Amino acid sequence: MSRLGRLTVLLCALTGACDGMPSRSPAKETAATAPDTIIIDGNVPSCATCTLTVSHIASLGGPSDPEIHRHLPDVIRDSRGYYYAGAHGWSNDLILRYDSAGRYLGTLGSRGNGPGEYTMSMETFVGPGDSVFVLTWRLDVLVYAPTGTYARVFRMSPGKRPLGMIPGTGGAMYAAGDQRPWMVDGRLHAHIINADGSPRDSFAVFSARSIVPRDPMVGDDGFVWTLTESNYRLERHARDGTPAQLIGVTSPSFPERPVMSRVEADSLALQRRPVHTTVTTREQALRRLIETKKLHGRVDANGLAWVTTQVSAPAWEKQSVMMLRESDEAPMENLLAPDEESALRNTIVEVIDTRRGQLLARTQLPFGAQLFAPGLLARPTSDANGHLRMEIHRVTLTRR
Image 1 (tube, rainbow, N blue to C red):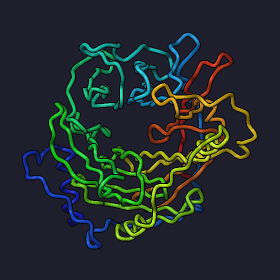
Image 2 (image 1 turned 90 degrees about the vertical axis):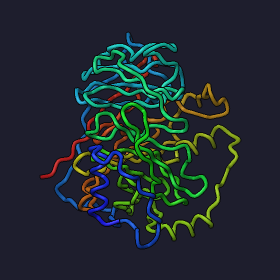
Image 3 (image 1 turned 60 degrees about the vertical axis):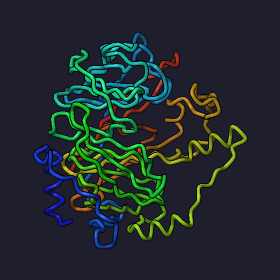
């Protein structure tokens, strides 16, 4: 598909003006349809005058507030600066609401099976006008007004899970199919869901089968992005699944070079098989947990990709931790309390200009943190009584 054709398809997705047009079958992945490829030298930022500064802007959770669940919760933020924290998929705890200063406002909805009620949340998104969309384990999507009051509900199709809202479409969203990228042919199927839950279109997202990608994300630019873990690679997809851009970053955190072609990736896939190691001691479990890199990414409306990599902190093995915590749902799964894990990790923050193909700036923070929006980090801490808090930090890019 030509560059103009891809732009036309994307505009259809964002405006809904092409509803009713016959859907296209995904393009075959050949060398002729390879995406625009950019290789970035991630060892040294290209902008000598760009700097990243970190500032603390809010604390979520106080001694008199309901305690945040011990599993690291997902945090989202609307345009007013209001925060929502939920332990999605881990417990039947309700989503907690906070204002821009971190003051507790109450829960979003209530526990139960009636209108506006749920027993477990799975995903949360900010929708049009700061409305909030909550996916429950029953695949119902509950919609709440910015005030927190219940507005309406619609049901997702079986096997589909929302990825994020599409900007400027009145509530339409991208959703992932139930065919995971590491199954069958390695292609993740994505869908466009209207505001009432009805399907609009679907496509297969380009992704090399030898790479286990993180869950795709919808950037503020309206594109679908995927970020891979085994090497440093960003993929941008147009609405019909056509790869629009492929960015490979050589990074000191990921010594393996980015895989640039599907043919090469498939060849490597034949050489790689999953390796399952048996963990028999607490020390082995702790080492595997802390030395595993955690990668998160968000893309803003200006085409800047904010990428964080959590790595083990220097001399982390010399620090003491109380104990490995076990999951209620998976008793054999070893977990650390989120504040303890954060103390054993560092977070590398990088900003990439996807339009120019440049790494602008990098900084390393002496704690583990979750990137939940472009330039916004959530760091778990606890007070003297062990009460969990989420510290919100803003990372600001300055170009002199």
